[in-house]
Image (tube, rainbow, N blue to C red; front, side, top):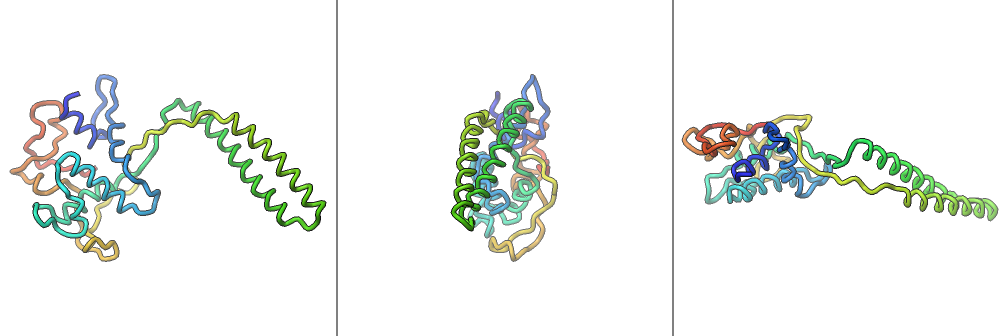
Length: 227
């Protein structure tokens, strides 16, 4: 694969049409290989993706503009939050790399295992709460029986299905506001989703998907990636 096509697939594979039996969408998994906090420190997730994009493909430390305009390069907080808005408009998803029936078989077996684990916890609690020695002995016997069943279910559990993570279009598509001094509690102006301004003005270079297959990439165009 030519390097120009490789780069475009990594950054915007979800916007490319499959060709010659290849699907470029998994290439965007590059942005899902960083830290994922599952609803926690999502701003740090966006920071990692902006950093991956800009340091990896441009050699620019744009992530420091999270808190202030770049001190040496023409990179502003508006640029940082414009890019962050692109990533904030995506959602992290893990795609199973197996046929649907294999995934279903694993999910059903795992559900049985989880149910049995919950039952074991309840019975262990019953041992602690038993009012008499007779009740405690009976509860211990039930715990032992459940543990035996649990071990059998673990042996029967199919191999875990491999997953391929990648971001995809999110449910909410919106711009971010600048976080003054990097503080999300102190919001400034809205930053419309776009690429770095100094690289997308009419006289500069921009990432153009139209030129992805030929010598015109990068192309002189104000095209902007907004998902």
